[in-house]
Picture 1 (tube, rainbow, N blue to C red):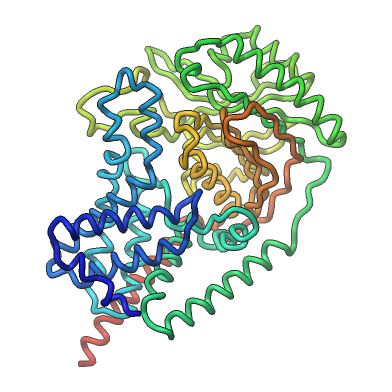
Picture 2 (cartoon, rainbow, N blue to C red):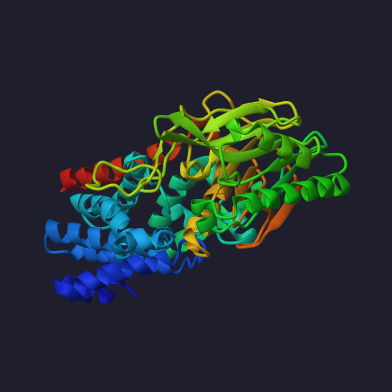
Length: 508
């Protein structure tokens, strides 16, 4: 069935058309992790695309793009409300505006493909221009405030299990933004008749075939030189983290879990040296200023190094959100200060006329790679930083594994922590590096260098996860070229569409 027969409602304009566009954006969000209901995407994108094509004016097309974006981002980010609820007694009035407010800032980017695609006539040039401009606009989100590249459409391929593992393998070549381009283009092509559907099916078959081949061939096996990662998930409620209620009990719980985890690691993985990892907000104090706490951690770890999150003073009421590496004797071997801050959560953008945050977090100098005797070469990150495709490895300092610590307790048992976890899985495929993702309440996980789930914890459980660290792969195309690969792909598609338009025009 052709799309024209399904698109009479948005042509009418008015409130019915507006609600239809918002609704289609919400439907498209069903394809995002953790649901990954992929059939929702071609339906929603196809109807949106057709509505833009038949819009009587440029202004109407721009409005449809904005409203679709509002629906998509509000539904995809609904869980942001949970963060406000942790301090609802202070910010109850923000609750209705949390997700819609963020959506309001990034929804205008979807106006870009809605407007640009109308520069060329209908057909494959218009679809190419739409997919290319959508991808370029999506990539531009890294420049919003401190950057907000959450939920790119390429992440819809991250289905759980082996199916998702196969589908995301091309990210090693073109990154998640390249997957976005392909997903958008395929979603539109499915509405262009039997020939286009056949082409999409053939391409999907080749895509899956290559994914299967890459997933199961030339696998680098880890040896005993790789550490045994001991992930400690303490399951501390966010209210306790914020108010420091039961701080001693929290610390004691982590110490006990550490002792148990190290003993189990040495029993079940005797050839691997244990490395203990605590999440962000695990230590309820200033670890670099607390020698006794460091001694207690060293005793609990029984000679194993411990990597954990702690705040640090930056002077004059300013703080760093840090990841600290403790040696076997408890002295500080290395420190990493979070450099990408969460907009509205860790810093207040200039657009806010009021203050929400009680503390001022200072960004660190940037990514680095630690090379520690018992840990190896590791790329440390804190929470939000894992979201940035192509920006998780320090330039010229490729590590053997990536580590991110987080505290997604802010967002409750919702899609938020699962979407965050999906970014770690995608970074593993892009960079060809195993990713260790450690969370306070869950979900914590370890992915191998091809994005396969080596092990994970459950949400809201005090739990240990002990696994040998998988081996790193060789350099992927994306790890060498970075975002220039999807950028050139989207830009070239857009240019081909425009050139073809003028070729046809001159041929008339």
